[in-house]
Amino acid sequence: FLPFSRHLFLNLERMPTNADVLHKIASSYVMDSSVRTDGLKEVEMHIGDSSFPVLLGCNKLPDLVAAFKEKHPDLDKVFLGYDENTAVHCGPQLEAEFKAQGIPFFSCVMGVSEASKNISSLDHIIETFLKGGGSRKSVVMPVGGGIVANTYGLAAGLLFRGIRLVQCPTTFLNAHDAAASSQKQAINHSGYKNIVGLYHAPSMALIDTSFYSTLSSTELKAGLGELSKNAALFGGAHYELIQRTTMTKGWRLSGEELVDATFVGLGAKDMLLKKDPREKHLALLFEYGHTVGHALELTDGVTTSHGEGVAVGMLAASFIANKMGIMSDADRSDHDAIVVALDPDIAFPNHDITDEVLEKVCHDNKRGYMPERNGFCPFILCQRIGEMHAPNEFYLEYVTVELVREAIIYVVARMSEKITQMAFPPGSDDAREIRKGTQRASSPETVTDIILSSSMSYCKNSPALTSAYGAHH
Picture 1 (cartoon, rainbow, N blue to C red):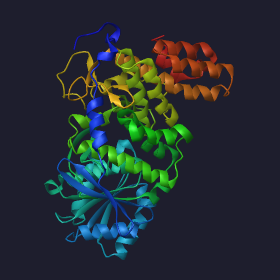
Picture 2: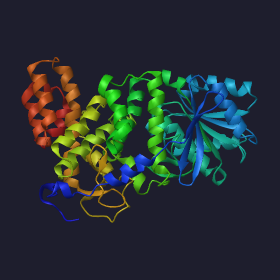
Picture 3: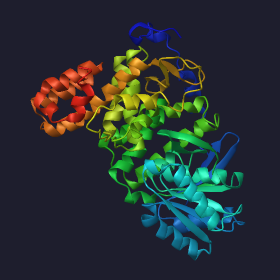
Picture 4: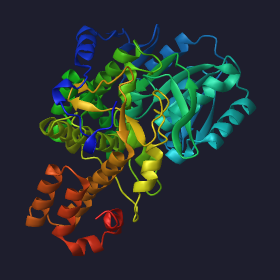
């Protein structure tokens, strides 16, 4: 690749695309699923040549536990892994059913935040397991969201060089995107996300969607954020799901819609992990939106869920693709409408975060797939809904650090518009002008000018916005 003036490719129609590859895979894919005699839905999740069953039902804990017991007749005890929330809201029901069916268990509780996904928590989990009498015949069962699934999953992969892992996701996101559909287990370290880990596939996953009833709007949006990403990746049924849910009525889904969405999400993972079990080439596509999304998640003072962070990261990716000539203005508008419909929530601190976010992007875990180039970061980029930019087998494009910085500034400005709407009454001239302006903006300078010109007094009362753009403007 050659450096391009103003980050532009010269001929959009000649951009390398994966359309033919993905269309062929998607058109031939059939999910291996069935309905069991006990009423549970069963999906066979494939990771390369191996597979494991995912059982799903609503208010079906007795049947799920019975199926687990049948599959693991030689276990000595179950090591239940909770966070501080699931220990209270999910543990009592699950433990009561284990007692009723005569299954010995013991447990451990970790923190609930991303900051708890660290080496200290891992050490505590392993110590609790060993002091509690865990053995090679024990089964580790994480009960919770992705933080729980990853941390206890990593412990299962390390103990005795790998013991059985049965995931019990209780969040919408974890059910379709991580615990029930992945063998990647990891913790954060030194400020970087999922940087210490291994591959360790579960022997089974149990999903009772009745646990979803305790989820907040943030947790539901987190799950829908990853599904929104899949809509951009694959189009087709994945885009249709978003069109009939968030793009029609927002994030509030019925119980039946949540089950349907979980199945669609599992299908996306199954479709690619069968061909790329370690997510080293084709399945790297699932990292779309994650480069800036992860960086925002890990930046001090930024508050957002993983899925919502990924959605915001998609806006950064479309900004970059558009500036490089990979995504047209019209295709960018269609792409960004998926994110707008989700209405992701994110809060920024009252200081400029650009440098911190950029530093984390520059140490993203996708580095190393391609030769390092000074002044560039690797990004997965989209051409249009259902078609990804495919410059190589890794789907990674070199993007200048300068352009990445512009993209970070842009998304902070665009998401700060939500705060602006709180200051200006909906329907006011200022609010309409800001919304129209940010949607048409193609550069951070444009966004800045629109917001600042609308109300200087507002900016003075918004330290985050003022500090983020003071020097730049």
